[in-house]
Structures are given as C-alpha cells and as structure tokens.
Amino acid sequence: MKPNPLPIISALGLLLSVSVPAAAQERAIPASGYREWRVYGGGPESIRYSRLDQINRSNVRKLRIAWTYDTGDAYKDSEMQCNPIVVDGMLYATSPKLRVFALDAADGKLIWSFNPLAGEQVTGKVRNRGVTYWGEGNDRRIFFAARHWLYALDARTGKPVTSFGDKGRVDLRQGFGRDPQG
Image (cartoon, rainbow, N blue to C red; front, side, top):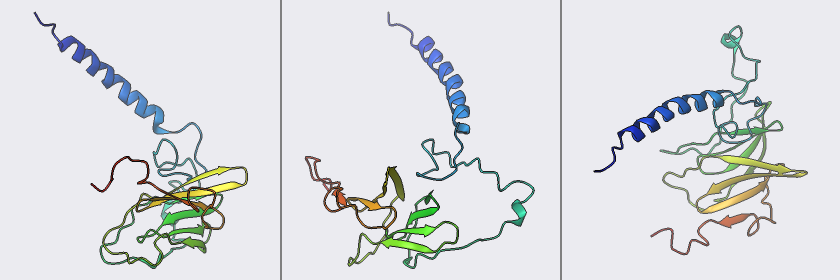
C-alpha cells in the first residue's frame, strides 16, 4: 500500500499560506529607509519604495516637473527598460541605444556620457535593465551590460576603469565552454 501524500501536501500548503504573507509583510517597508536609489528597484528588496516624506497628501497636487532630459537617441521602435539610480546627487541611466549617462539629480544637467557602441550602427531593439553602483573608499563604479560585454565606469568621470577586465570591460561569452549563440 502506497502512503497517502495528501496530509504532507496539505501541511506544505498551510505552511506556505502562512509564511508567504508574513514574509511579504516583513519586506514591505525596509528597516533602513532609502535616502538614495543605489540599485535597480531602490534597494536589495527591490520594492521601489522610499521613506522620504517631502511629498505627502497635503502637497502632492502642487508637484510640477523640475526638469527633463532627452537622451537624443530614440528611434522608431526603440525602448528604455532601465530604472535610473541616484547616488550622491547623481542620476545614472542608459539610453535607447545603450549609452550610459550621468546627470546632476538637482537640475538634470549632463555630467558625462559613455557610448559602448560608438561607431556601430544600432538597429532593431537593444535592451538592458540599466546600471548598478559599487563603491569602496575613493573607488566608485557604475556597472552595466551592453550586448555581450560587462562594463565598469568611473562614476565621477564616465571613463572605463582600466583595471577591470580588458580595459574596463569583460566579455561575458568567455568561459562558457560552449558557444552561447548556438
């Protein structure tokens, strides 16, 4: 006679029904409020939430556009699927043609721009999920992927970090042991 799996399945279902909502509620508001937006989604929880309180129910209707920025490289059927990040008063993002740029978050002025596809014809849809930040001491870097390359840029200048990989980039196809195309 085979054992009846129903009690085990029921117990697992009950456990999940209790633990998943509790875990979701626990993550709803991070213990440390975000003052910056250093990674995709705002923080490691990726909840896209900030405890900043300058905007509230009494003043939300008074909001006005402070500044806009045109990447200048949109084209027919192009897309932007990135979530900009903000670190130390700088906004970092990518454009439809995968150019990475840094703006002063206060006024939207361009600080620097880096084009990983310089000299290449960009047609069709190219996508990425934006950039991420890493910093330690005086070393501050913006990481992003374009095509099969992972780049590291100096967050202050936008120049490739030459000590990273091959002059600031790593070929993500290397080390697979197979052709990732086929």
